[in-house]
Amino acid sequence: MQDLIDELGHLPGVGPKSAQRIAFHILQSDPVDVRRLVAALTEVIDKVRFCVSCGNVSAEELCRICSDARRDGTVLCVVEESKDVVAIEKTREFRGRYHVLGGAISPIEGVGPDDLRVKELVTRLASGEVTEIILATDPNLEGEATATYLARLLKPMGLRVTRLASGLPVGGDLEYADELTLGRAFEGRRLLDV
Ligand SMILES: [Zn+2]
Image (cartoon, rainbow, N blue to C red; front, side, top):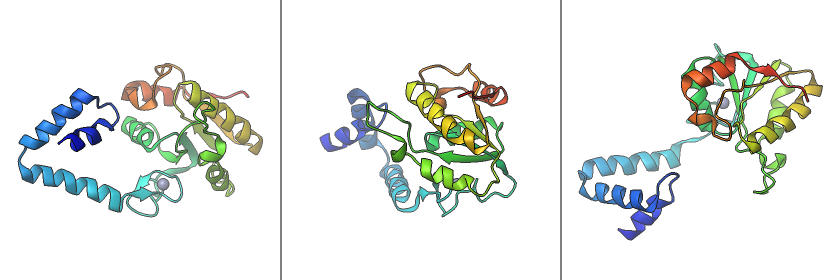
């Protein structure tokens, strides 16, 4: 029981008290439901991988967004994590494709551009199909630093580089913005001067 509580306590947003509550809930649940949870966890480890093109979580080699011919291939939205793709998709404001960096530049945590999928991004741009890059990194220190770095890297390549409009909660995560605010931020995106 303690092992379960410890493991649950490692999950984001789950403190020791919540971990204990969840563990006791599991203990009192129908074993059929618990086995379904275990099966879902196992399946996620075994079957989910990352799209070879954009880096988003995917069941196939190419994710459903990259393989969807109806998506606009000229606009690329750069985000930190797969969960940001989910948040932006909910707004239904964006019809282009994505590029998932896998984090943000953070000198404190020792994360530099080489630790992110920046090289993969530059490789993707070589075909010349993409004309606009929307930098949708988080509105916090690391996200801004990453956006500035990418803008300086990409602008000389002749691309239109834009950043989501302000109005997003500063210092927070993109995923915490409500759909309406995030949708508006897309519509009001501005050109980045670097
Ligand atoms: Zn993809």
